[in-house]
Amino acid sequence: MISISQHWIVNASDRLALVLFDLPDAKPLSNQVFVFLHAWSNWKDERDYAHVKIARKIVDNGTGSCVLFDYRGHGESTGSLADASFDSIVEDIDCVIKWLENKQVKKINLVCSGLGARFALSFAHLMSIDSLFLLSPAILIPSSLSAIETSNLQAVSDLLEKDLNHDHANLRKAFYKIGALPDHLSAEYIDPSFFHHPQFLSENLPDIASLNKRVVVFYDPEQDSQKSLSWLGSHTTLIPLVGGGPMFRHPDLLVQIGEKICKCCEMKS
Amino acid sequence: MSSSEEFFDVSLDNIILRGVSHFPDNIKPKGIVISSHGYNGERVDTHRMLVKNSRNLAAHGFLSVRFDHQGCGLSDGDFWTSTPKIRERDVIAVTDFCANRYKDSPIILHGFSDGCRVIAGVASSIRPCAIVLWSPILFAFSSSGEPGAIPPWERHPLDRSFVRPFLGHWMGAQYLRETSKSPDLEIDGIPTLVVRGAYDVDVNSSIDYLLANNTVVDLIEIPKAGHVYASPLAEQSVIEQTRTWIESKATRSLG
Image 1 (cartoon, rainbow over the protein chains, first blue to last red):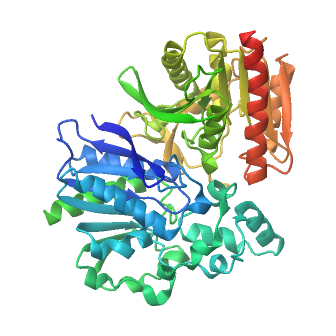
Image 2: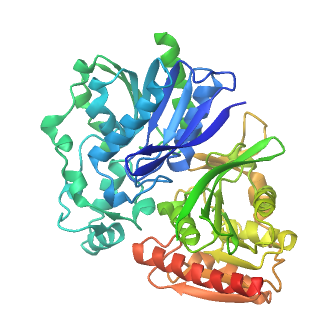
Image 3: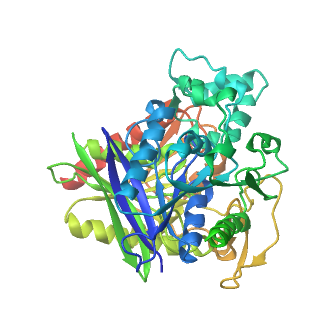
């Protein structure tokens, strides 16, 4: 039986909702912890509770403890999506990792969906992180998103409607490419300057080799958005999963991801 | 009005349901609003709508409770066993938990989409002072979630029950058996608010059924909105109009 506890963590003026998955006899946390980073505009469960299902598999297998949380402006944390910048999200991740370090956790791994991978890769070289598991990682911002006028906050529903009126549907595809579900997002206001952060520029792509960490990428080889993973180089393990699209929307695929993460960690130890 | 939020766990037959309560600081709540999310939703739900709704209600003096049904989100259990009948028991357990804490507060039940069937089924047991139904879906839907594709049934390896993939979930055959029957509408005499999007044709048969069964229904139609009210204006309109309606019913209930 898995023990699940819910916590609030205070970071500056915001309160982050955090959930800890553990085995009841692990005190206080397993030596190995997996921190899940959701995609921008999603929340800790992820679509189809994907992160919850993977976390349950990891804990049930005895591989480690898992932490899921919402960035500020997301899910059950305080704030609005429009106020969540690249830097504030990285601050929130740092806050959670420090919370774990204070609990004497020895080994931290990251499991990241969509843009969560880009957030992780911006600081992974600075922290004692063991492995990164990237689920359909989004690294660069599609041009249709970076082209949104930046002067004001924009309602996503208005942006999608304008796009459709011009027979494009480019924005909808672009949101999918960064791991965001347009229907979960369309009642939100966004600050388009989010997409102009220097970390999203191609010259700032992370050098995976210099990270000196294990990087495992799960991707759907049938999706155009996933075909170009060449920037990863030869220092990663690529695991193709076909049939559920870039968000792995089939229950078997979520089980497979959980099992493969456990296996990778067993092989390393 | 300042408000606070607390996580809670409710145990039901070795299953733990996990939720969040939003409550006003320093006053007795004007009423308790308990929400049941949609079929494959969870306590945050699409564009955080249940979070925003609860924060709005708490800021206006209500205790608002969101939780994950069993098999959903962070609660225990398996999705393919999470049928409307099972979910009705979840609502009763969470209502008991809240009512014990705030005795004599009027109870308002709130459903979203498929959660409306759950609320309609449980109303006769709880006898709330009012019911709110957002985008009510009272009858089965047969699609797999993928256009044009209905995959065959399979046996789930754990309990051998019939399941088929529905997005990232296993949908159970029992869910379709339960929802293929007309729902138990035991909400006679309980004031009921139905909110619908003007463009949402999926709710037509359910609303017709509600009206044909002599339920006391106030109907609000949100212009230019679909099933999940996917624009800031539509979302705000649903939340504000719901809260105003609830305030009027709770005040009347308290006399």
